Amino acid sequence: MSTVAATATRRIAVPQTRRIVMGVLFAVLGLILWFGFGAGAEPGQVTTFGLTPGGVAATLPDWVISTRPALMILAVVCVFLGFVELVRGFGRMTNLVLGLVAGFFVFGFLVWAAAGTSTNLGGLINSSLLKAVPITLAALSGVLSERAGVVNIAIEGMMLTGAMMGSLVGSIAQNSMAGLVAALAVGAGLGLFHGWMSIKYKTNQIVSGTVINIFALGITSYISALYLQVNQELNHPPLFPTFPIPLLSRVPLIGPIIFQNNPFVYAMFILLVVIHTALFFTRWGLRHRSVGEHPKAADTLGINVFRTRYVAVLLSGMMAAFAGAYYTLGSVGRFDEVMTAGRGFIGLAAMIFGNWTPFGAFGASMLFGFADALSSKVAILGIQIPSQFLLMTPYIATMVVLAGVVGRSQVPAADGVPYEKE
Image (tube, rainbow, N blue to C red):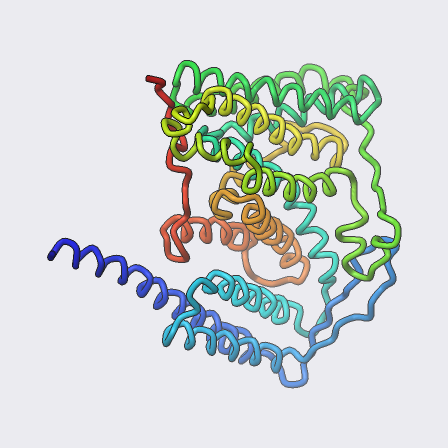
């Protein structure tokens, strides 16, 4: 009885501890807004936000707000939400309220940072979305693989190889679609190699992924130095053009951000819906997830665990290569050594932060993209805050999630565990 009681006590204590931590966090953020930002604002000072991300949409007038009153209101709301969380809690709505408070705090920071001047809020949102595209695609690559029980730490290497192959073949054929097909092919090959090592030979999946990363870094740097830098005609692929969607692209603010982009951005939104629907609302998705949760039970029910996992790493490799091709065929227009700059690993962090779900990973990717865009914006505004502090905040948030403070992340039970067929 004592053991059962102790277990029950622990089960109750964890949500209570979480409620206290979250309530204190909300209140602290509110106090920072009040004393750290609002108290230092000059009376009568205003902040001007531009709402023109560019494009063909009708422009909106600037949004002018009073700096100190806005910060005070945001602070009071955050403290009030913290008080409610401490007293009774928001239950399942806690994470939603956390996102709301985080949004208030970020907006308050922007109000304070741009006080007495102006900043283009529309451009900041647009830049955040574009920076989040490769991270989201990398996160989707991780979701596809790890939902089936295979850890794919090789996403970075697959992205890098896909970027190089897309640039090389696209330049030779002078056709962006040919470059994309080549990138997807090499991604599929690396994915199958990773599956071959980790599924058939049951190699440690971290080691297998690390081998691919090292190989990709070496081979792409070698080919770049030997051929691409010497022969610029081999490193100048045509970019996918921008396709404005009629009518929707003319919607103020939202139109240019979402509906006036290249195919990679549209594909990202489509893939989010397709993968989420396929994973959670189809028979294929049920089988896919089952081999990542309980492969023995799935095998007993007649599901081919090995084939399902091979398909998972194949799709994961193609998705990672698609993310890499975004740089050379959808953004930069050339390949540079190590141009992915760790975005594959950031995608894995976004996947974890998003709790192994497509839309959760997209939200986390937007957080990373916003931090990246904001770091350059802060430098323009002349704020004496090192950009590295802003760039590390999403990683801190990821560690907080992994620690279970804002709700325990649910790793697929058989993730990274080779299956032994009896």
